[in-house]
Length: 356
Image (cartoon, rainbow, N blue to C red; front, top):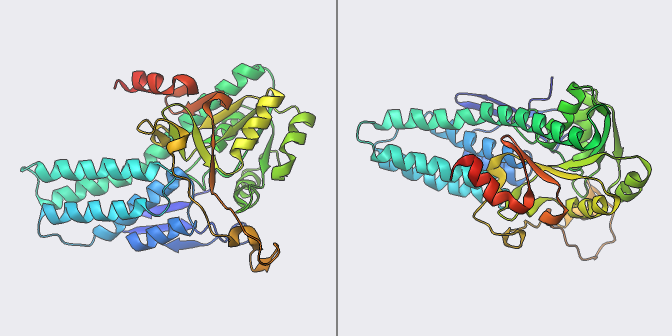
C-alpha cells in the first residue's frame, strides 16, 4: 500500500510533514486557510496536485463550522481565501485552476435562487472533498497510460529501467502518484527491472521523499546524484525518463522541478525517451509557451545549508529558481489520465479530447 500523505474527514485535515522526512513521519493539523497557506509555502506539502487538494480542503475545514448570513458573504469568503491560497506558490497551476473552478461554482450557486446559504455551503464542501478521490483515480489512469507508452517503445516483453526526478508519488498527490504512478504500474505488471531516482538538489525531494516511497513500497531502486545522470544513461541502458509537471503550456513546454531541463537535454543526446506525467489540471492552455510561466525563486538558505549546517562559503551570492522549463521539442509525450499527447500538438489534441 502506498503512503497516505493527506488525511481528511469533514472538519479535520492532517498532512504528513514532508520537511521532517525521511527521519520522522509526523502528521500536522491544518485547521484553516492560514495553516494551509503556510504548509504550502514552507513546503510541508508539495507537488502540484497535493498543493491544490490541501489548499482547497483547508478552506473546507475553515468554513464547515462557520455560519453565513447570506450567500453573498459566503461567496466573498470563498473567492478571497482561494485567491490568497494561490499566492502561496505561484508556479504550480493546479491550485489556480481549482480556485477558478470553485469560485465559478460559488458564483453559480449564488445566482440560483432555489438554493439557500446552507445548501450552497454543503455543495461547495462536497466539491472540495471530491478532489481527493478524483486525484487518485486520475493518477492510476496516468500510471496505466504511461506504462503502456513506455512498454510500446521498449518492447512489451522486456522489463525496463527508468529514471525519475524530484517526487511525484503519494507524497505529491492524493495517492499513487503521477510519474511515480507510472513506475508503480510497471512494477505491478512485473515489467520494472529498476528505477533510478535523482537526489533533486537543493531541497533533496528525490533523496528524502522519492527514495522514502520506493523503500516503503519495496521497489527495486537506486538513488543517484543529480550530476550522475549523463553517466547513468551511458552505462545503465535506461529505457525512459518519466517526470512530473507543475505547469504545461499550450505549446507543450513544461515547468518542473529545477534540474528537469538538463535531464531532458541529456536524454535527447542518448536517445532516451523523455515523458512528462501530469493530470489535465496541470495543463494551462491559457499560457502560450514556457516563457510565460512564472518561476518561483526560493531562499538562498536552501542552497547554502543542509539543516543547520552551512555547506557553502559565507558571502557567496546564490540563484535558486525552484523550477525550470523543458522545451516541447525535448519531450516524447505528455501522459495524462485521458491518454498520451504529443507536445507539439498538445492544444489541438487536448481540445479534441475535451470537446472544447
